[in-house]
Structures are given as structure tokens and as C-alpha cells.
Length: 203
Image (cartoon, rainbow, N blue to C red):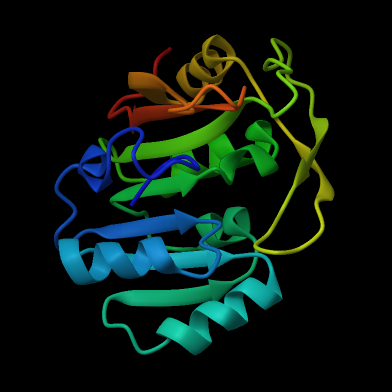
């Protein structure tokens, strides 16, 4: 389990802590590989939510009978509004596709007090463009498997802004790390942020 595009960079699933027997939310689960890994090797109970029907179908076809994983098609914020609060949540590169002013309140209310939220987010893109210091989405090009790159709207934010947003929405940021290419041929960098849902909201 890796948090950026380079398997040899950054921590693995240990950053989630002890997840055995705990209900986790996989935000933007894609083909379900990470959810399956956590269920099989860490004993987690994972709700893997994916908005893309194609990715969801792929996950169900390849892993639909995996014990401990429930694959759900739909909007993760809607899921958080209706599900029993989770013991933790994670997102590998997917949280910035959702407006933080929509996702973070839902995560605050959809996680039990003390639950971890761990996510990675684009920091610097392929062309060296740095993150934004204001809460404004921008266009990025992404490639899904072997497809032609497609334009998407993303919130590519500085670490300081992510920390402010998380703090304002009931989280305490515990650790941040910058994941960079092990070679010299890429300017891409990703942030890895571990936060925790506060037990008592700050006044």
C-alpha cells in the first residue's frame, strides 16, 4: 500500500495504525486494491466507495467476494451522511477531487471521535506548478490506467491551507510529509497528511 505514484517512497499501511476489526472508509476506492489489502492482511472492515461506475464494476468483478470489504457505488459525502460513523478514513490521491468545504464537514460528522483521517494529495504537478494558497480549484490532467489524459477539477492546496481547513473542521493534524520522486526526472510531489477527529470541537 503506497500513498503516491512511487512504491518505494513513503510509509505503507502502518500509517493508519491498528485497524484490525475497525470500520474504515476508503474514499475513491477505484478498483479496490487497497481496501482488499487492508481487509486481507490487516483485518479491517472496509466500505470502499467509488463514484465511477466503470471502476466500481471492475472492483466488484475482481474482488466482490472478498471478506471484510463492501464495494459501494456513489458519492462518498452522501454515504457519510447516512452511514454509522466510521473508525477511520483514508484517501489515496482522491480527496482533492471533492470541495473541502463539502468533504471535511461530512468527514468530521461521519467519523467517531479520535478516528484517524489519512490522505495523500497532489502538491506539485508534472510541470512544476506549486499548490494554491487559496481555496480555489484548478484544472489538472490525469491519466487512468492506459487512457488519454483527461481534464479534471482539483483542489491542489498548500500544506498550511490543508492544516487550517482540517483544524477549522474539527481535526487535529498529527503528521505531514512530502513524497517526492526518487529520481531527478520528475517535479511531481505529493503530500501525506495524518489527522485525527477531535474528541471535542474547538470553540
